Image 1: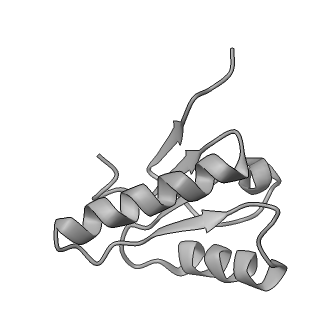
Image 2 (image 1 turned 180 degrees about the vertical axis):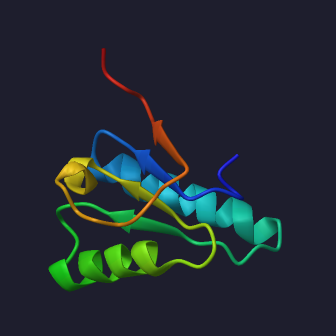
Image 3 (image 1 turned 180 degrees about the horizontal axis):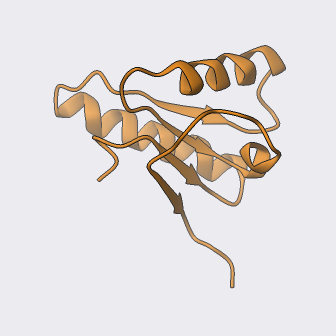
Length: 90
């Protein structure tokens, strides 16, 4: 579903972010795709977070990021096609 779209995939905690990104990257490897699902959360080194933000903003093809609310803090990453919430709390 996110294969041809830029997407932000929100999870409620860092562990779920990491697990989801690993799973999605493994699935795309099996399909022969070179698509990466990036990770963004507060426990990642600042320079790594900034790198992901730069990649997302400059993407000339769809890119996706699995993240916590860290990307809701007014960080400019350009346009995204879809937003997905995993295990949202009600």
